[in-house]
Image 1 (cartoon, rainbow, N blue to C red):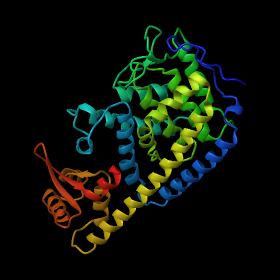
Image 2: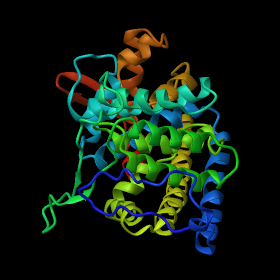
Image 3: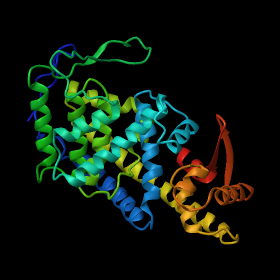
Image 4: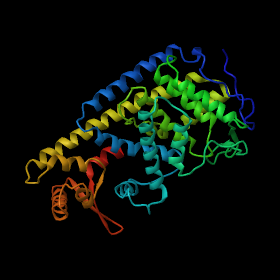
Length: 370
C-alpha cells in the first residue's frame, strides 16, 4: 500500500498515517540482510556486557557519553572536563549550563529504563515523564495553540525554510501518540530493531512536545531495545553515530515524510545499530583491559580494599576524595594518600578546577573520548 505523503511543509501533517506500517515497506532483501548484520553485532555486545562482573561500570560511563552525544545533536555542547566535573558534583543543585542539561538527559534515560521495569508496557506517562525530566518542566503534550514549524538549519540558501510542520489540533496529537503506544505494545509485527526504527520516526513526526522531542525520541530507542530484551542495560552508544552522520539522519527522516522512502530510513537505523554495537563492544573490551591493568599495578602496592577502589575509579572519569569517604571506603587522609599514590604511578592525574581537586582516570577518559 502506498504511503501517504505530507503534501505541504507549511501545513500541519494531520494526515500522518497510523501504524502499523505496511510490511511491504520493510520486507525487502536489503533490509533483511542489514537486519541480520545489526542483530549479530547487537547480540555480540549483549554477550560481552553480560560477561563483565560489574555492569554498573559500563552503564555509568557509556550512558554518560550517550547523554553527551544526544545533547550535542541539539547543539547543547559541553567539554569532557565540564561534564565530568558536573557529574562528580551531581548532588550540587547550583549546577547549570550545558553540562547540567546533559546530566538531565542521562537521568531521563535511566528514569525511562526504570519506569519500564515497573510498568508492563509503554503509555503516555512514560513519554511525558521523559520529557519533563529532560526539560525540567511540568508541561505536557503540546496544546492545539502551540504552533510549531521545523525549519532548515545552517547558513545555506535554504536556511530558515520550512522543512516539516507536525500534526496539530484538538485531540489529534493525543490520538496519534496513543496509536504509536499501541504499536510499541503490540505483539508480533516487525523485528524489534525494525520496530524501533519505525517508532522513532513516528514519534519525531508526531512531535508531541514543545521542545526536547529529539532527545526523548533517542531515549525511546534505547529504552525500547532493553524493554524488548535486546539488551539488559541501556549501553548502546547510538547517538554518537547519529551526530557523526547528522545530515544523513535528517535527510532520511525527511525522505519518509516527503517521499515515503521507508527503506532508506530503516537501513540507516539498522546500520547505526550495527556500527554502534561494534564500537561499544570495542569500548567495553578496552575498559576491561584498563581495569585489569590497574588491578595488576595495585597488586604490587600495599593499598587496601583494591577491588572497591577500582570500582570507584571506573564509575566515572573524575574521582574526588569525598567519593571515597562518602562511600565509607577510606578515611579522608587515607583516601587522599591512595589517590596521590595512583597519581605518582601514572594511573591518575590530579586536576585543579575552580579550586577543587579532581583525580582524572586518564585511560578511561581516553577510551570514552575516542
